[in-house]
Image (cartoon, rainbow, N blue to C red; front, side, top):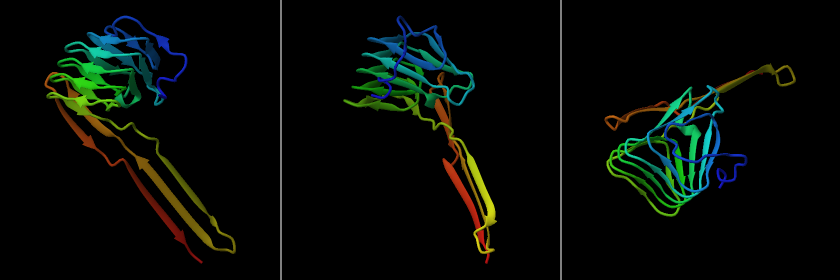
Length: 193
């Protein structure tokens, strides 16, 4: 509902194939079709995101591709589908699909992103599905000083995060992935009296 409620979308018509889209919100009043290649061109910013509002169905043709460039990440692409989504044979798709009804991946379709069917099921047939966790910013803080009464104290904390990296080869429908711990936290506290 949050994606469907985004205001000011760019209204699209026709096939997504052959389009190059910058970050933003895009809308199809009824169904959306992808034949060929759709390129989502990032700006290199960590805030780049694409939101697709599709009134009814999303369908990709055989061997259709969603290609990301300019630092775009699959975890920043969202497809809100009013009814069902079908990824055609051998398609290579990127982004999270949120379908009101069902999602079907035909033979050897590859999806790099989450698949969520609210009213029915997700049907798979010899597919590769992989998700990616978007990087989260890291922070650190430190404080050195007395806690009153001449008692020195030192507190150092550091938080770092990482991401899951996945690679998908659409020609062979094989995938490999590696995961670095989602977050690691270290802290050092020292108090002396």
